[in-house]
Each structure stands twice: as structure tokens, then as C-alpha cells.
Image (tube, rainbow over all chains, first blue to last red; front, side, top):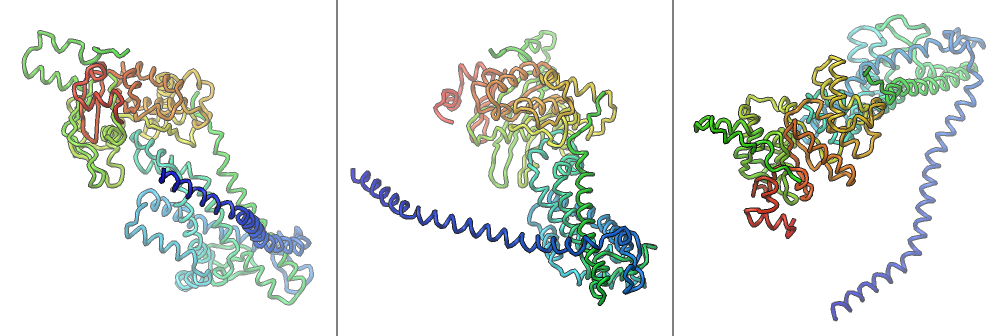
Length: 306
Length: 282
């Protein structure tokens, strides 16, 4: 009898407390939701306004000439375009991706499939990866300068691509590792039970399942390196000429934007806005193209049966 | 209805023309498809299997029953050497197939064993990025089989063997994960059958399925055991009674009793067995 009374006494006490708190709780809910909305706006509004600013100032500068002509003499109103910069950006990003993506993916595979624990070596790899992600890109540019530009004696596409790949690799490593970890272990066990070798399970089954996540990682990394200016200043130098060779300087959009913005002429500034808009468009197109190319082989699987 | 005297107990051992002692013994060993001898298994320092000795008869279904944690899943994962793929897991002992290959021998490649002993898991796990056809042929293709016509034939045969062909024959290039749970499990069975295994291990194959899908799988076991040796873990005693010819009862890592299914269920010899069978615990 006494126990029952004690239990129902406690129950009543708790129910009273919770009742008094419920109106407070509802108020807190509303405050937190409002704060969340404010947070979203704080994130989106600056982004949207930058985008709008670029579109507003740059759209008028986009002409066929801008996109196809090399820069002309300074200050002349109809002076050329930024075509070498567009070409250069594509080449340097392309080369950096060719170097950085496979290295990043393989390292991510290693960390997730072959050394998922806390061993000394994998932990060190993860640590270095995280440190590299936060490294200022100007420092990476200096590394590129010292290792390639000084030793080969010239600013070059290779030096630029090398530096950008260093920025790209840790991003791809971390995203690949995280994406692979999400693939359920039951898939690996299914492969093991069929007597399939581990590397084949990893490449043809696990990686394939994680494909869209890995591609997202690469796209993210490309978007990041497409806009990096500091490493390019010290490695590709920039030029008004179109691409000539991998061991020569080349132009790139971030560099060209910076140079145009530094000039005192309005025509140059206007071209700069145009270049900025084009950079955004180029990255968007690259991202979509990469997704489309790797998605079409997605679920329209052609069975190879007769 | 469990066939009591199929397979091993068909009387040929009593053939008067082979009464020589050694010969008889040899025949006895060879008549066991899988012979488990003194098997111990650990997860780190915790011992999960204690001195298991069990002889599995060919062309029959053997059920392994017991309460949760008794080691039945650990046991079948030792049979295809998947146990040690768990970090920290070890096993020691002998598991002899057909009287001649000890899969725990140092010289045996654990990957190769899995091609002779297939496995179907509790939760169906078809490869998510592959079509039905590619799922079934995955084991073959990734193990070097290139002959397209051969693969075609085997895929059809395997899907028929898994009683799935009629349902999917016109949609072989649809994604495997688009099938219902029961169909996915049959797809996984077909995928395992494609490797032409001699033994099929089934780890609670119907526990994630509804009763209708479950009964289809049980029918399948009845058919498949004519060609293969099937070892199935189940926590459903009634299923064990329906489906298997022999039953092994395990408790806390030990094999308590093993015999024909009807003997175990009707006249269990050990008290523990009797208590489990009658639902007094577990």
C-alpha cells in the first residue's frame, strides 16, 4: 500500500512539473525555430547578394569577344577578352583533378577498407589530411613555387596543377572515406561469401555503391580549386597568351580577375566582373557535366544477356 | 513431414559386401559431407564455441537450433571461414570436407573455400548497384568467368533453382533492390547457387521475411537438398522441424545434442534439449 502511494505521489509530482514546463517549452520551441530561420537567412542572404552583384555587373560584359579574344592593350575600350584565362583555368583544373582525384580516392579507399581502425599509420594519414585541408592556399603556392618553379626554372602549368592538387587531395580523401564507411557491411559480406578477392569487392562493389558520394567529393574539390588565386600567382604566373606547353606559364580566371580588378580603368573592371561571372558559370557547368557523365551509367543497366 | 531416412541412413552402409573394418570407417568418413572436429572459436578472449564435434550428412538439410548467443551463427560462419573476417575473431580446429580437405589447414586459401561453401544471410543483401542478372552473375564474373553463354545458362539455372525465374525472367535488367524482401532473398540464394557450391549455409534465412515468403524458402530447401548439403541456422524450432532431416541443438557455445530431426523433437536424450524444445527457456 505504502509503495503504491509513493509511486503515485512521485508520478503526480512529475506530472505537475512537466505541466508547468509545457508552456515554457512551447515558447522555447518558437524562439529556437525563429533563430534557425535567422541563421538560414544569415547564410543565404550574403551568398545571394554576392551572386546577384556578380550577375548584375558581369552580365553586360559578356560578349563573344570577351570569351574568344585574348587581352588587348590596356585601357582601350574594346580591348580583347579573357579567352586565354578560360582555357588556362580548364587546363589547370583538369590536370590538377587528374593528379588529385585518383590519389585522393585511393587514399580514401585505404583508410576505409584496409585500415579503418586506430593504428598509428592510418591515424597519421587522417591527421595530415585534416591539417592539409586547413592549410592557407598561399602556403601551398609557395610549396609549388619552391618544388617546381625553382627547380625547373620557369613558371608552368605543371606547377599550378601540382599546387592545386595538393589542395584537392585531402578534400577527396575525407569525403571518399566517409562515403565508403556509409556503405553497409552486409554488401561486403555478400561479396566475401562468393569468394571474391578483397580488391575486387572494394573496386567493383563497394566503390560502385558509393559512386555518387565520391563524385560529389570531387565536384566539391573542383569548385574549391577553381577559385584559388594565391597558389596560381606563384606557380603559373599568368600571361596574355593562350596555352603553349605544360612547362610554360598560362593564364587562369582567378588571376585574370585579380589583374583586371587592380587596373584603374573602368573597362578593365567591367571585364573583371564578366570574368567573375564566367568563372561561376564554368564551375557550374563542370559540376553538372561530371554528374551527368557518371550518372548515365547509373540505373539504366544494360544486362549483357541475349 | 521430415524425411527420416534419406541420405546417409539409406542402408548402404549395412551392405554386407563392405564389412571390412577400415573400409567401413573410410566409407563413414566419406559419407559425411562436412566433418567438424574439436572446433573452438573466440571473439577476442571470449570463447564462443567450445570443442564442437559434428558430422554433417550430404544431400540433407541440417538445422542448428538454440537460444540467442549459443554460437549457432558463429558455427556456420566458421564453416566457410567468414568467422575470422571479424576483427579479433579466431578459430581453431578441423573442418573436413568430403573426407579430404581440412579447410583450417594452413595450405588452404580461405577465399577458395567460399566458392565451395556458399552462404545466405539473415537480411537479404543483393548488390544495390546491379541488376537482377548482374547480381546473380556477380560471383562468376568477378571470379574470372568470361564465357557469356555459360554465364547466361548459369544465371537462368540459378534463378530457376531459387524459384525466382518465372517472376523475373522478363525483367532481368531491373535493379535487384527493386524486388520484394522474399524475392530479394531468393535472388541472394540464386547468387549463391550460381557459384555451383556443394554446401549452402543459411543464417536464419527467413527471419526477416513474412510467412508466405518464408514458406517459399522452406519449399526451396526441400528441393535444393537433393543436390546440395544445406545447413541452416534457425531460431524458429517449428521451421527446423518442418525443413530439416537432422538437427543440432547448441547452448552457450557447446553442442548439446545432435540427431535426426524426429529423434530430437520426439525423444530428446538430454534434459536441456527437452526443456528448450518444449519452450521452457530460450
